[in-house]
Image 1: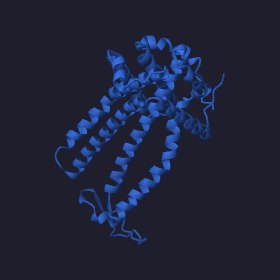
Image 2 (image 1 turned 60 degrees about the vertical axis):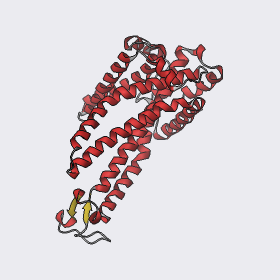
Image 3 (image 1 turned 30 degrees about the vertical axis):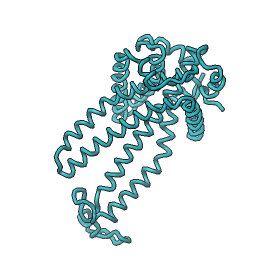
Length: 316
């Protein structure tokens, strides 16, 4: 059987279908939002700490280095924090799918004693992130190989989460179930991993926002440049080129200030982090239900079982 990558229009349709039906599941138990909110808070705090450090360093204030160090520590710890939150979300999803209404504390209690699995998943995520960073620096065949490794891990990781959260398997035992699961993966989820349609589509939808937002920030930096803090001032445009023409309010004496660009990049990082956590949460819910249907079909709530068929196949 050959698999093809959905085009952008198909990806957008699949994204809407996934989001709509994921919220249907969340509507059964609002506790599913708690791990997502926790990841949002952590992601936002991490970005804030790092950018506060940058601001203090640029501004020449004390303590900037400590904030930057704290941001770096939070960056590495996020792999452990996110994996625990994703396991909690997976457990909540399963317990909801079988007809229960578990609380966040109930799910955390069920996951007690899985510290070694959390650490193993976090370390593998770190390795996958390093591989992804190397992909952008390599060319040719090596880039394709590294990209393939990243996609395979993304797929394996989201199959492993429910195996650990539901059946409390170790990574070795969980890997043994992947072959059976792989045989049932819908066509749209193979190749460049269909559920990453979300990452691709979100990137496409957000691209105009980033482009126009950056242009607006640059215009603000020029228009308000003279009245903004001098710490971020790049000086008059004549310092960049003596041949700057007069265009509207822009001229050789116009002062450009980097502060609006700095603030836009800061807000962009927060938005990107929040969207990334939404994508992850939808994947966790989807693959938990997929795993549940294959490994524990009799445990599912009969009212949900029929609805899950089309949802898991990405068909209306």
